[in-house]
Length: 526
Image (cartoon, rainbow, N blue to C red; front, side, top):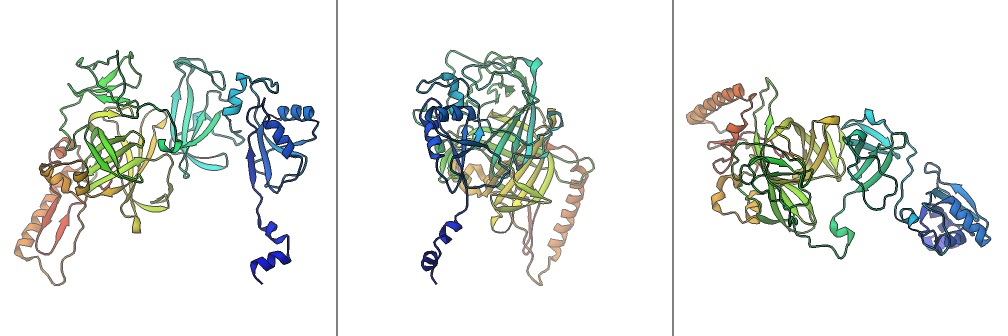
Protein backbone atom coordinates (compact mmCIF):
# COMPACT_ATOMS: atom_id res chain seq x y z
CA UNK A 1 0.00 0.00 0.00
CA UNK A 2 1.51 3.36 -1.05
CA UNK A 3 1.74 6.40 1.22
CA UNK A 4 -1.19 8.16 -0.43
CA UNK A 5 -3.40 5.09 -0.09
CA UNK A 6 -2.35 4.57 3.53
CA UNK A 7 -3.22 8.14 4.44
CA UNK A 8 -6.58 7.83 2.68
CA UNK A 9 -7.38 4.62 4.52
CA UNK A 10 -6.42 6.18 7.84
CA UNK A 11 -7.44 9.86 7.73
CA UNK A 12 -5.73 10.72 11.03
CA UNK A 13 -2.44 9.14 10.08
CA UNK A 14 -0.90 12.22 8.40
CA UNK A 15 -1.94 14.51 11.27
CA UNK A 16 -0.44 12.10 13.76
CA UNK A 17 2.93 12.46 12.05
CA UNK A 18 3.05 16.17 12.79
CA UNK A 19 4.96 17.03 15.97
CA UNK A 20 3.72 19.73 18.31
CA UNK A 21 5.83 22.91 18.38
CA UNK A 22 5.95 26.08 20.48
CA UNK A 23 5.05 29.23 18.53
CA UNK A 24 6.20 32.52 20.10
CA UNK A 25 3.81 35.42 19.51
CA UNK A 26 4.63 39.09 20.20
CA UNK A 27 1.51 41.31 20.22
CA UNK A 28 3.58 44.43 19.45
CA UNK A 29 2.42 47.91 20.44
CA UNK A 30 0.22 47.46 23.54
CA UNK A 31 -2.04 50.39 22.54
CA UNK A 32 -2.65 48.88 19.08
CA UNK A 33 -4.73 45.97 17.84
CA UNK A 34 -2.05 43.32 18.44
CA UNK A 35 -3.43 42.23 21.84
CA UNK A 36 -6.95 42.12 20.35
CA UNK A 37 -5.84 39.81 17.54
CA UNK A 38 -4.04 37.50 19.97
CA UNK A 39 -7.19 37.17 22.06
CA UNK A 40 -9.24 36.43 18.95
CA UNK A 41 -7.01 33.54 17.82
CA UNK A 42 -7.20 32.11 21.34
CA UNK A 43 -10.91 31.39 20.86
CA UNK A 44 -10.20 28.22 18.84
CA UNK A 45 -7.99 25.18 19.38
CA UNK A 46 -4.55 24.92 17.75
CA UNK A 47 -2.33 21.87 17.08
CA UNK A 48 0.69 23.79 18.44
CA UNK A 49 1.38 25.60 21.72
CA UNK A 50 0.92 29.39 21.48
CA UNK A 51 3.34 31.27 23.75
CA UNK A 52 2.42 34.96 23.98
CA UNK A 53 5.14 37.34 25.17
CA UNK A 54 3.11 40.03 26.89
CA UNK A 55 1.91 41.51 30.17
CA UNK A 56 -0.85 39.19 31.58
CA UNK A 57 -2.69 42.18 33.12
CA UNK A 58 -2.86 43.83 29.68
CA UNK A 59 -4.42 40.71 28.13
CA UNK A 60 -7.02 40.44 30.92
CA UNK A 61 -7.98 44.12 30.60
CA UNK A 62 -8.28 43.91 26.81
CA UNK A 63 -10.31 40.66 27.04
CA UNK A 64 -12.74 42.38 29.40
CA UNK A 65 -13.15 45.30 26.97
CA UNK A 66 -13.84 42.91 24.08
CA UNK A 67 -16.13 40.65 26.09
CA UNK A 68 -13.93 37.60 25.44
CA UNK A 69 -13.27 34.74 27.81
CA UNK A 70 -9.66 33.55 28.05
CA UNK A 71 -7.65 31.47 30.53
CA UNK A 72 -3.98 32.49 30.86
CA UNK A 73 -1.56 29.64 31.53
CA UNK A 74 1.98 30.45 32.79
CA UNK A 75 4.81 29.46 30.46
CA UNK A 76 7.06 26.67 31.75
CA UNK A 77 10.04 25.96 29.51
CA UNK A 78 10.72 22.61 31.19
CA UNK A 79 7.14 21.36 30.71
CA UNK A 80 6.28 19.19 27.66
CA UNK A 81 4.93 20.98 24.61
CA UNK A 82 1.18 20.46 24.11
CA UNK A 83 -1.51 21.72 21.70
CA UNK A 84 -3.28 24.93 22.72
CA UNK A 85 -6.84 24.39 23.94
CA UNK A 86 -9.63 26.73 22.81
CA UNK A 87 -10.11 29.67 25.18
CA UNK A 88 -6.54 29.50 26.56
CA UNK A 89 -3.20 31.22 26.01
CA UNK A 90 0.26 30.34 27.32
CA UNK A 91 1.89 33.57 28.55
CA UNK A 92 5.57 34.43 29.01
CA UNK A 93 5.16 37.50 31.26
CA UNK A 94 6.82 40.82 30.40
CA UNK A 95 5.74 43.84 32.49
CA UNK A 96 4.52 47.06 30.89
CA UNK A 97 6.47 50.24 31.34
CA UNK A 98 3.39 52.47 31.65
CA UNK A 99 -0.43 52.14 31.81
CA UNK A 100 -2.08 51.49 28.45
CA UNK A 101 -4.90 53.48 26.84
CA UNK A 102 -6.08 51.78 23.58
CA UNK A 103 -5.23 53.92 20.58
CA UNK A 104 -2.84 56.23 22.49
CA UNK A 105 0.92 55.69 22.22
CA UNK A 106 3.11 56.11 25.29
CA UNK A 107 6.93 56.45 25.14
CA UNK A 108 7.07 54.67 28.48
CA UNK A 109 6.31 51.41 26.68
CA UNK A 110 9.08 51.74 24.11
CA UNK A 111 11.29 49.20 25.90
CA UNK A 112 8.27 46.86 26.26
CA UNK A 113 7.96 46.76 22.47
CA UNK A 114 11.66 46.68 21.50
CA UNK A 115 13.40 44.79 24.33
CA UNK A 116 12.93 41.49 26.12
CA UNK A 117 14.65 40.29 29.28
CA UNK A 118 14.72 36.50 29.23
CA UNK A 119 13.61 35.15 32.62
CA UNK A 120 16.54 33.50 34.39
CA UNK A 121 15.05 30.65 36.38
CA UNK A 122 18.26 28.64 36.87
CA UNK A 123 20.54 29.27 39.80
CA UNK A 124 23.71 31.02 38.69
CA UNK A 125 27.11 31.08 40.40
CA UNK A 126 27.77 33.88 42.84
CA UNK A 127 29.90 36.66 41.39
CA UNK A 128 32.81 35.97 43.74
CA UNK A 129 33.09 32.32 42.68
CA UNK A 130 33.48 32.86 38.91
CA UNK A 131 36.81 32.31 37.13
CA UNK A 132 37.90 31.89 33.47
CA UNK A 133 37.58 28.31 32.24
CA UNK A 134 34.81 27.47 34.72
CA UNK A 135 31.96 25.31 33.38
CA UNK A 136 28.41 26.38 34.17
CA UNK A 137 24.89 25.19 33.28
CA UNK A 138 22.73 28.26 32.67
CA UNK A 139 19.39 28.47 30.94
CA UNK A 140 19.51 24.74 30.30
CA UNK A 141 22.76 24.85 28.29
CA UNK A 142 26.44 24.31 28.97
CA UNK A 143 28.65 27.41 29.07
CA UNK A 144 32.30 28.21 29.76
CA UNK A 145 33.41 31.40 31.51
CA UNK A 146 35.66 33.46 29.22
CA UNK A 147 36.35 36.51 31.41
CA UNK A 148 35.41 38.09 34.74
CA UNK A 149 35.91 41.84 35.13
CA UNK A 150 35.15 44.58 37.64
CA UNK A 151 33.03 47.26 35.95
CA UNK A 152 31.50 50.57 36.93
CA UNK A 153 29.27 53.11 35.23
CA UNK A 154 30.97 56.20 33.79
CA UNK A 155 27.90 57.97 32.42
CA UNK A 156 24.45 57.31 30.95
CA UNK A 157 22.47 58.99 28.17
CA UNK A 158 19.18 58.41 26.36
CA UNK A 159 16.33 56.03 27.18
CA UNK A 160 17.29 52.94 29.19
CA UNK A 161 15.21 49.88 30.15
CA UNK A 162 16.20 50.31 33.82
CA UNK A 163 17.85 53.03 35.95
CA UNK A 164 21.66 52.95 35.69
CA UNK A 165 23.82 52.12 38.66
CA UNK A 166 25.56 54.99 40.49
CA UNK A 167 28.64 56.16 38.61
CA UNK A 168 32.19 55.99 39.85
CA UNK A 169 34.82 53.44 40.91
CA UNK A 170 33.24 53.15 44.39
CA UNK A 171 30.26 51.37 42.85
CA UNK A 172 32.06 48.55 41.03
CA UNK A 173 30.25 45.35 40.09
CA UNK A 174 31.11 42.10 38.32
CA UNK A 175 30.41 41.32 34.66
CA UNK A 176 31.17 37.82 33.38
CA UNK A 177 31.29 36.80 29.72
CA UNK A 178 30.55 33.17 28.83
CA UNK A 179 30.80 31.19 25.56
CA UNK A 180 29.25 27.95 24.31
CA UNK A 181 29.70 25.41 21.53
CA UNK A 182 26.81 26.95 19.53
CA UNK A 183 29.01 30.00 18.79
CA UNK A 184 27.09 32.18 21.25
CA UNK A 185 28.24 34.58 23.94
CA UNK A 186 26.36 35.09 27.20
CA UNK A 187 26.78 37.87 29.77
CA UNK A 188 25.99 37.84 33.49
CA UNK A 189 25.65 41.38 34.84
CA UNK A 190 25.84 41.53 38.64
CA UNK A 191 24.98 45.23 38.97
CA UNK A 192 22.12 43.94 41.15
CA UNK A 193 23.73 40.93 42.88
CA UNK A 194 20.39 39.54 44.04
CA UNK A 195 19.00 39.70 40.46
CA UNK A 196 21.81 39.11 37.91
CA UNK A 197 20.87 40.17 34.38
CA UNK A 198 21.36 37.50 31.69
CA UNK A 199 21.75 38.22 27.97
CA UNK A 200 22.67 36.00 25.03
CA UNK A 201 23.89 36.90 21.54
CA UNK A 202 26.04 35.75 18.65
CA UNK A 203 28.48 37.39 16.27
CA UNK A 204 27.09 38.44 12.88
CA UNK A 205 28.67 39.96 9.82
CA UNK A 206 27.66 43.55 9.17
CA UNK A 207 26.21 42.53 5.79
CA UNK A 208 23.77 40.14 7.54
CA UNK A 209 22.08 43.08 9.27
CA UNK A 210 21.17 44.63 5.88
CA UNK A 211 21.41 48.15 7.33
CA UNK A 212 20.78 51.19 5.15
CA UNK A 213 21.90 54.81 5.41
CA UNK A 214 25.18 54.00 7.16
CA UNK A 215 28.11 56.37 7.12
CA UNK A 216 31.11 55.59 4.98
CA UNK A 217 32.59 52.24 6.02
CA UNK A 218 36.17 53.35 5.47
CA UNK A 219 38.67 52.82 8.24
CA UNK A 220 39.40 56.49 8.78
CA UNK A 221 38.43 57.89 12.17
CA UNK A 222 37.51 61.59 12.32
CA UNK A 223 39.62 63.51 14.81
CA UNK A 224 38.90 67.01 13.50
CA UNK A 225 39.72 69.67 16.08
CA UNK A 226 41.22 67.11 18.45
CA UNK A 227 44.71 65.73 18.88
CA UNK A 228 46.40 63.09 21.02
CA UNK A 229 50.03 63.60 21.89
CA UNK A 230 52.41 60.78 22.75
CA UNK A 231 53.04 60.99 26.53
CA UNK A 232 56.61 59.86 25.91
CA UNK A 233 57.90 62.21 23.19
CA UNK A 234 55.01 64.60 22.45
CA UNK A 235 54.57 63.53 18.83
CA UNK A 236 51.05 63.44 17.39
CA UNK A 237 49.41 60.01 17.51
CA UNK A 238 47.48 59.08 14.38
CA UNK A 239 44.52 56.82 15.20
CA UNK A 240 42.53 55.45 12.27
CA UNK A 241 40.23 52.76 13.73
CA UNK A 242 37.28 53.31 16.01
CA UNK A 243 38.06 50.15 17.99
CA UNK A 244 41.69 51.01 18.77
CA UNK A 245 42.69 50.47 22.44
CA UNK A 246 46.50 50.58 22.02
CA UNK A 247 48.67 52.39 19.47
CA UNK A 248 52.42 52.72 18.94
CA UNK A 249 54.02 56.11 18.47
CA UNK A 250 55.52 56.47 15.01
CA UNK A 251 58.31 58.66 16.44
CA UNK A 252 59.60 56.90 19.59
CA UNK A 253 57.80 53.53 19.26
CA UNK A 254 56.26 53.82 22.73
CA UNK A 255 53.09 51.75 23.24
CA UNK A 256 50.26 54.07 24.34
CA UNK A 257 46.99 53.01 26.01
CA UNK A 258 44.18 55.11 24.45
CA UNK A 259 41.29 53.03 25.83
CA UNK A 260 40.19 55.93 28.08
CA UNK A 261 39.73 58.27 25.11
CA UNK A 262 40.79 61.80 24.27
CA UNK A 263 41.49 63.99 27.34
CA UNK A 264 42.39 61.11 29.65
CA UNK A 265 45.78 60.56 31.20
CA UNK A 266 47.48 58.21 28.74
CA UNK A 267 49.46 55.28 30.11
CA UNK A 268 52.43 54.12 28.05
CA UNK A 269 55.58 52.04 28.09
CA UNK A 270 58.77 52.26 26.03
CA UNK A 271 60.12 49.48 23.83
CA UNK A 272 63.36 48.89 22.02
CA UNK A 273 63.80 49.48 18.31
CA UNK A 274 61.52 47.26 16.25
CA UNK A 275 62.51 45.69 12.99
CA UNK A 276 60.35 46.77 10.11
CA UNK A 277 57.80 44.10 9.14
CA UNK A 278 58.16 42.38 5.79
CA UNK A 279 54.58 43.35 5.02
CA UNK A 280 54.51 47.10 5.78
CA UNK A 281 51.66 48.67 7.75
CA UNK A 282 48.95 50.01 5.47
CA UNK A 283 49.58 47.36 2.80
CA UNK A 284 46.40 45.84 1.35
CA UNK A 285 46.25 42.20 0.26
CA UNK A 286 43.34 40.29 -1.30
CA UNK A 287 42.66 36.95 0.40
CA UNK A 288 39.56 34.88 1.23
CA UNK A 289 40.52 34.03 4.87
CA UNK A 290 37.28 32.25 5.65
CA UNK A 291 35.04 34.75 3.84
CA UNK A 292 32.80 33.55 0.96
CA UNK A 293 35.03 35.39 -1.54
CA UNK A 294 38.46 37.11 -1.57
CA UNK A 295 38.43 40.50 0.16
CA UNK A 296 40.94 43.34 0.54
CA UNK A 297 42.60 43.12 3.97
CA UNK A 298 44.72 45.97 5.31
CA UNK A 299 47.68 45.48 7.67
CA UNK A 300 46.96 47.69 10.72
CA UNK A 301 49.17 46.04 13.36
CA UNK A 302 52.32 43.95 13.70
CA UNK A 303 53.50 41.83 16.64
CA UNK A 304 56.67 39.89 17.42
CA UNK A 305 56.23 37.07 19.93
CA UNK A 306 58.30 34.39 21.71
CA UNK A 307 57.43 31.39 23.79
CA UNK A 308 58.85 31.12 27.32
CA UNK A 309 60.59 27.83 28.13
CA UNK A 310 59.93 26.49 31.60
CA UNK A 311 62.94 26.50 33.96
CA UNK A 312 64.99 23.39 33.31
CA UNK A 313 63.03 22.55 30.18
CA UNK A 314 64.76 21.08 27.13
CA UNK A 315 62.27 22.75 24.74
CA UNK A 316 63.74 24.95 22.03
CA UNK A 317 62.61 28.57 22.26
CA UNK A 318 60.77 29.82 19.18
CA UNK A 319 59.95 33.19 17.67
CA UNK A 320 57.15 34.21 15.31
CA UNK A 321 55.34 37.18 13.81
CA UNK A 322 51.67 38.13 13.65
CA UNK A 323 50.06 40.69 11.33
CA UNK A 324 46.73 42.15 12.39
CA UNK A 325 44.53 42.51 9.30
CA UNK A 326 41.36 44.61 9.07
CA UNK A 327 38.34 44.76 6.77
CA UNK A 328 35.51 47.30 7.33
CA UNK A 329 32.72 44.68 7.35
CA UNK A 330 34.56 41.46 8.26
CA UNK A 331 36.53 42.79 11.23
CA UNK A 332 39.96 41.50 12.28
CA UNK A 333 42.05 38.49 11.26
CA UNK A 334 45.58 37.48 12.28
CA UNK A 335 48.15 36.45 9.67
CA UNK A 336 50.73 34.29 11.47
CA UNK A 337 54.31 33.78 10.22
CA UNK A 338 56.28 30.97 11.90
CA UNK A 339 59.31 29.00 10.81
CA UNK A 340 56.97 26.14 9.84
CA UNK A 341 54.97 28.34 7.50
CA UNK A 342 52.03 30.71 7.31
CA UNK A 343 48.51 30.52 8.65
CA UNK A 344 45.54 32.76 9.41
CA UNK A 345 43.26 32.73 12.45
CA UNK A 346 40.11 34.58 13.41
CA UNK A 347 38.89 35.06 17.01
CA UNK A 348 35.81 32.94 17.82
CA UNK A 349 32.60 33.99 19.53
CA UNK A 350 31.94 30.50 20.86
CA UNK A 351 34.14 27.85 22.44
CA UNK A 352 35.10 24.43 21.00
CA UNK A 353 34.19 21.19 22.78
CA UNK A 354 37.35 19.87 24.49
CA UNK A 355 37.67 16.22 25.52
CA UNK A 356 41.13 15.27 26.72
CA UNK A 357 43.66 16.09 24.00
CA UNK A 358 40.97 16.59 21.35
CA UNK A 359 38.95 19.72 20.49
CA UNK A 360 35.98 19.83 18.10
CA UNK A 361 34.82 22.95 16.27
CA UNK A 362 32.53 23.35 13.24
CA UNK A 363 32.32 19.57 12.92
CA UNK A 364 36.11 19.12 12.64
CA UNK A 365 38.24 17.25 15.21
CA UNK A 366 41.60 18.67 16.23
CA UNK A 367 44.45 17.09 18.17
CA UNK A 368 46.45 19.05 20.75
CA UNK A 369 49.98 19.62 19.54
CA UNK A 370 51.57 22.30 21.73
CA UNK A 371 51.07 23.85 25.16
CA UNK A 372 53.36 26.69 26.22
CA UNK A 373 53.71 30.15 27.77
CA UNK A 374 54.34 33.11 25.46
CA UNK A 375 54.82 36.85 25.48
CA UNK A 376 54.66 39.75 23.02
CA UNK A 377 58.05 41.45 22.74
CA UNK A 378 57.57 44.16 20.07
CA UNK A 379 54.58 45.81 18.39
CA UNK A 380 53.82 48.39 15.71
CA UNK A 381 50.45 49.86 14.71
CA UNK A 382 46.95 49.83 16.23
CA UNK A 383 45.29 47.10 18.27
CA UNK A 384 41.75 46.51 19.53
CA UNK A 385 42.91 45.33 22.96
CA UNK A 386 45.06 46.92 25.71
CA UNK A 387 48.67 45.81 25.38
CA UNK A 388 50.71 45.23 28.53
CA UNK A 389 54.48 45.00 28.74
CA UNK A 390 55.75 41.39 28.64
CA UNK A 391 52.31 40.05 29.61
CA UNK A 392 52.62 36.23 29.75
CA UNK A 393 49.85 34.07 28.29
CA UNK A 394 49.10 30.34 28.37
CA UNK A 395 48.63 28.96 24.84
CA UNK A 396 47.37 25.59 23.60
CA UNK A 397 47.54 24.88 19.84
CA UNK A 398 45.52 22.22 18.02
CA UNK A 399 45.95 20.74 14.54
CA UNK A 400 43.09 19.37 12.42
CA UNK A 401 42.87 15.63 11.89
CA UNK A 402 42.27 13.59 8.74
CA UNK A 403 40.90 15.63 5.82
CA UNK A 404 40.99 18.75 8.04
CA UNK A 405 44.78 18.78 8.60
CA UNK A 406 45.06 22.35 7.34
CA UNK A 407 42.74 23.63 10.07
CA UNK A 408 44.07 25.23 13.23
CA UNK A 409 42.61 25.95 16.67
CA UNK A 410 44.24 27.88 19.48
CA UNK A 411 43.29 28.69 23.07
CA UNK A 412 44.97 31.61 24.79
CA UNK A 413 44.53 32.70 28.41
CA UNK A 414 45.91 35.93 29.82
CA UNK A 415 46.65 36.60 33.46
CA UNK A 416 45.25 39.48 35.46
CA UNK A 417 42.47 40.48 37.85
CA UNK A 418 39.70 37.89 37.97
CA UNK A 419 41.92 35.25 36.36
CA UNK A 420 42.44 37.02 33.04
CA UNK A 421 40.61 36.21 29.81
CA UNK A 422 40.28 33.12 27.60
CA UNK A 423 40.00 33.53 23.83
CA UNK A 424 39.75 30.90 21.10
CA UNK A 425 40.67 31.36 17.46
CA UNK A 426 40.30 29.18 14.38
CA UNK A 427 41.81 29.26 10.90
CA UNK A 428 43.87 27.38 8.32
CA UNK A 429 47.39 27.16 6.95
CA UNK A 430 48.40 29.28 3.93
CA UNK A 431 50.96 28.79 1.19
CA UNK A 432 53.78 31.33 1.28
CA UNK A 433 53.38 32.18 -2.39
CA UNK A 434 49.71 33.04 -1.80
CA UNK A 435 50.79 35.58 0.86
CA UNK A 436 53.45 37.08 -1.44
CA UNK A 437 51.02 37.37 -4.34
CA UNK A 438 48.22 38.83 -2.22
CA UNK A 439 50.35 41.67 -0.83
CA UNK A 440 52.41 42.28 -3.97
CA UNK A 441 55.75 41.43 -2.37
CA UNK A 442 58.74 41.29 -4.69
CA UNK A 443 61.55 38.80 -4.83
CA UNK A 444 63.52 40.72 -2.23
CA UNK A 445 61.19 39.29 0.41
CA UNK A 446 63.18 36.13 -0.23
CA UNK A 447 63.50 33.27 2.13
CA UNK A 448 61.06 34.34 4.80
CA UNK A 449 58.22 33.96 2.34
CA UNK A 450 59.27 30.43 1.40
CA UNK A 451 58.89 28.84 4.83
CA UNK A 452 56.14 26.38 4.06
CA UNK A 453 56.12 23.45 6.45
CA UNK A 454 58.71 20.87 5.34
CA UNK A 455 57.99 17.14 5.89
CA UNK A 456 60.41 14.71 7.40
CA UNK A 457 61.35 12.30 4.60
CA UNK A 458 62.72 8.78 5.23
CA UNK A 459 65.69 7.55 3.20
CA UNK A 460 65.39 5.01 0.41
CA UNK A 461 65.62 1.34 1.33
CA UNK A 462 69.18 0.04 1.39
CA UNK A 463 70.78 3.46 1.13
CA UNK A 464 73.57 4.54 3.45
CA UNK A 465 74.76 7.81 4.84
CA UNK A 466 78.34 7.49 3.68
CA UNK A 467 81.29 9.18 5.38
CA UNK A 468 79.99 12.67 4.69
CA UNK A 469 76.61 11.77 6.16
CA UNK A 470 78.20 10.35 9.32
CA UNK A 471 80.24 13.51 9.84
CA UNK A 472 77.19 15.71 9.35
CA UNK A 473 75.19 13.56 11.76
CA UNK A 474 77.88 13.88 14.45
CA UNK A 475 77.98 17.64 14.00
CA UNK A 476 74.19 17.76 14.20
CA UNK A 477 74.23 15.81 17.49
CA UNK A 478 76.79 18.22 18.95
CA UNK A 479 74.67 21.14 17.80
CA UNK A 480 71.57 19.68 19.46
CA UNK A 481 73.45 19.11 22.75
CA UNK A 482 74.60 22.73 22.80
CA UNK A 483 71.10 23.87 21.91
CA UNK A 484 69.56 21.92 24.77
CA UNK A 485 72.03 23.48 27.18
CA UNK A 486 70.81 26.92 26.22
CA UNK A 487 67.20 26.37 25.29
CA UNK A 488 65.70 26.92 28.76
CA UNK A 489 66.92 30.53 28.68
CA UNK A 490 64.86 33.45 27.41
CA UNK A 491 66.87 34.28 24.29
CA UNK A 492 64.09 35.91 22.30
CA UNK A 493 66.20 38.84 21.08
CA UNK A 494 68.87 36.50 19.77
CA UNK A 495 66.36 34.30 17.97
CA UNK A 496 64.54 37.20 16.39
CA UNK A 497 67.79 38.46 14.85
CA UNK A 498 67.97 35.28 12.76
CA UNK A 499 64.28 35.20 11.81
CA UNK A 500 63.45 37.15 8.68
CA UNK A 501 64.84 37.69 5.22
CA UNK A 502 67.95 35.71 6.12
CA UNK A 503 66.13 32.76 7.69
CA UNK A 504 65.71 29.76 5.46
CA UNK A 505 63.98 26.72 6.96
CA UNK A 506 66.31 24.93 9.38
CA UNK A 507 67.29 22.00 7.11
CA UNK A 508 70.23 19.65 6.99
CA UNK A 509 70.26 17.80 3.66
CA UNK A 510 72.17 14.90 2.15
CA UNK A 511 71.37 12.58 -0.79
CA UNK A 512 68.85 10.36 0.93
CA UNK A 513 67.62 12.04 4.15
CA UNK A 514 66.11 15.44 4.91
CA UNK A 515 65.87 16.45 8.57
CA UNK A 516 63.75 19.44 9.55
CA UNK A 517 64.01 21.08 12.93
CA UNK A 518 60.51 20.94 14.57
CA UNK A 519 58.90 24.30 15.11
CA UNK A 520 55.62 25.52 16.48
CA UNK A 521 52.91 25.40 13.81
CA UNK A 522 50.17 27.83 14.64
CA UNK A 523 51.07 30.34 17.24
CA UNK A 524 48.12 32.34 18.29
CA UNK A 525 46.50 35.35 19.01
CA UNK A 526 44.53 37.31 21.35
